[in-house]
Image: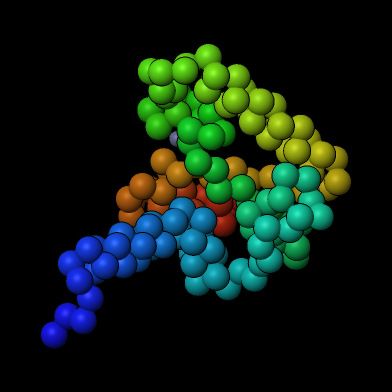
Length: 137
Ligand SMILES: [Zn+2]
């Protein structure tokens, strides 16, 4: 017997789904399964990288296509309303990203960027993450 109301159940299911499709979690699970150990969201590093592989002096950013202005990506197209506002905002984000990446590189870190659209199905996930692994090692 279902102890939750229909609304509550669908709320729970939507939460479950969003957790399981979290792109960063996909990357973390994959790397962990390949034996990599890492820390998360290191505030001490420029741009607070999502995943930090200290042993390999490598950081990984798992980027949302829209917020980080993924080039030539359908998911990064701007809304039809307040287009100028969004354009300026995304351009600022992109500039800040570039500055942070340069800082990290000058500190001797390798920077890997993964975009959410590169993880949208299992084939892409395997393809993207096997490339990531070979560029780490
Ligand atoms: Zn994208």
